[in-house]
Image 1 (cartoon, rainbow, N blue to C red):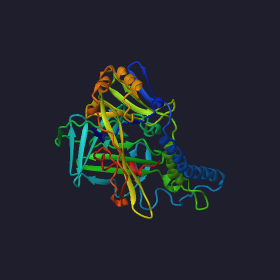
Image 2 (cartoon, rainbow, N blue to C red):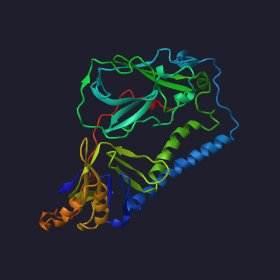
Image 3 (cartoon, helix red, strand yellow):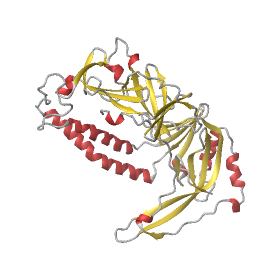
Length: 430
């Protein structure tokens, strides 16, 4: 059969590039060497990272050599168009717009019995999950089928001995395990009879920015969402993060540094690995090494369902030609899909490409199956299968097509609504 489900790993026809080991109930499948495409990607990412990294260094060095002082607004207080307010943070004054908080009106707000909330506004539907962790509140917006989380601090949980450290935490510090995981497909019972669980309570955004200079807060009031943005008087008088024209605009670092880090993350040469925790029913994909790395976690995995599916994967290639029509061709890659069931559908953790040699990845496949306690039978059955029942291996010939008519490569996209429309991430300071 032909498969379009995207695997988490594509094991190439080089069995020595992969290994399996087991620690307790955790089975680890990892790369031993980087593939050719990974090496090319690392070089490209480093080339793209070079310019913003150099630009950031030049700005920092230039700013350290400047004798200029930050631009100061000569006006006292908040200045024109702003008023002082002591309601944002106990004992502190912030400058806020005289018109009050920005208000976004919902068409409906529904609460489920499993800590999910669904909002509609102008025909759009937004859904997110919530959980209280210590004194904080985590919202997980459903984006592309996964929970993307942000952390807030209810104003009611700010005690009399609060410090600015309470309002400025590390990103993801209080994230529950479900943050970053896929969303279950089970239906939920929503009710419009219940108010928002934090209705009427101001919530501080605590993961981004500097609370000494700027606060961003939201509050749910019935079907209204209020967003309040306040800045300290000192921050207002300094004109923000920018020097006078003859100085260096340090605010540009808020653009160049994230871009640099993004490309450098793409150039991470560490090898990738899958960790299959049989007892916990959890699978984690991340890079190997002691330093932190981005990771993706899948919960509710039934490892006892592990099986092998003989399949042929199709890759489509397009070669562009400025002088004429482009050239398109497809290639077919036979191999084994490792299939594992989970709560909201099957996963393909690894595709073992073998070019028709069913025993090419035998030792790796058997190590995984034995580590998952399912035995070798799912693999041995394919070796005993008559050749006529195995998928035919064909190679498509190149075809002449217009560039605009070239079809997209076979693939599967993860669907999902985009979280809450009131998400204040776009206004956050880096």
